[in-house]
Length: 246
Image: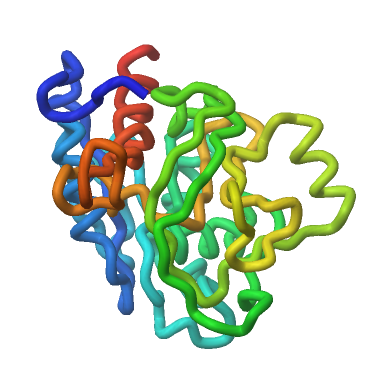
């Protein structure tokens, strides 16, 4: 993947506003906001109790433990006032990315099919994870190429993606599997699925954390040096390029 960092700004990106929703129990909203800023856009903080998205151009649901993961991960968050607006905006075509707990919320909100369940080994896992990008045509993956292998951090206890066989077959047939785990399946996800998209490609759920691999010195180890990995940047530059191409 080409260098997509601050040395290669995207013309017009500074006028775009990407909202990051904070729920009680969110942990990674500031990391997501920083990833947006490093990509060249404006990060806008949204609160779970908001009844409006303001004038944002895209939305990110970050990782964490919304509402303490009571009942099921994301099950309470789907009833937050802001989620009614997120669902409406997503159905209208606005790009929405759910990361880890955000992926769980997207499934609970029925913006994406399937569910995320307890890891098959019954343990929380935290590791730098290799992924294969399967679909480089979504609003959040256009900075990659299909088949590209990237490494971004993974941290979850309920990250196993499951769905009915008919749903899995449909996801495969329609190219809606966005990313798969490469080398090892860390949580027992069916068909090694790490991320999926809706039919339109504007809504993406991803279990690993691209926002933790956007700044040299703070990401995974890479061939260029220790902690030098910035493979997660592409998710954030992709949506900016998608918005600017409309």
